[in-house]
Image (cartoon, rainbow, N blue to C red; front, top):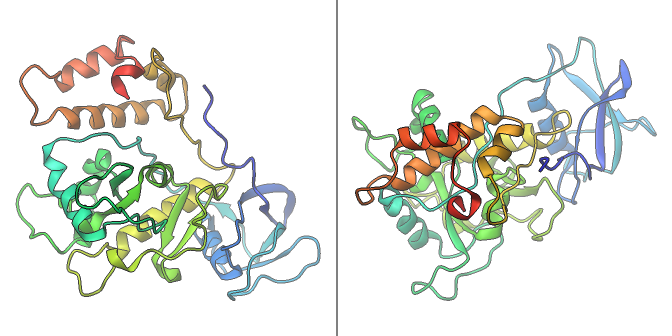
Length: 318
């Protein structure tokens, strides 16, 4: 099954003044993107050596550093120098799965702090007896823990003491509580929170959840709470979301709902980012077996079976 195309429903597009017929990127305006936030997104996806000027293709009206809502349509980007589209790495993530006992503390801490979906605002009225439809979501994904360690993202967490062998990726500062459906969209970079725009939530896809323009709930970002969510990690996720949705044709949206019997690993091998997706699915599945009873498959077994095309079908993996 082909990945979904993020560019299909775009109602805002932008081009280089030197070649106005070649689309450099675009976005879906659900009503919350201002001219100021649009310019900040362009500064993420475009590389120039001098300031850019942006104006509407139809009327020539300039786009300003203002809170005015961005109008639908086509825009021209002008610059005294060459404009290049950034090739900054976009880090896709696998859909979140059940995890090993190593993350129980993260889950319990997030539940105790938030008690609601901090993006939609829906409160868990069954607290503390049931958490059906609510999930503790990592902002920086667990399956990329090797990159977290390599680039020292743990420096953005200060509620866990530094220590040998402690990555701090399961700090409550790297997560919040979300409804299950919102969690999936967050993991696909279809919505994000910009801490530099008063924690405004942007829906980069059609706003099916009615969350575009909302503000991240204060319960998870209270300055008096030492376990409050990290602004730097929110900033990382927002940048990744802009790269995924605004640059070029956008990055693929991978299928996550596989019918029973589907050869999930074959679908991965035949799609884009095959090697990266394989490695991250492997890391996620292996993490689920950590600390479990003897007899669970080893990482070497999973790699050998999946790599040979004999991996589990979706009724096992889902």
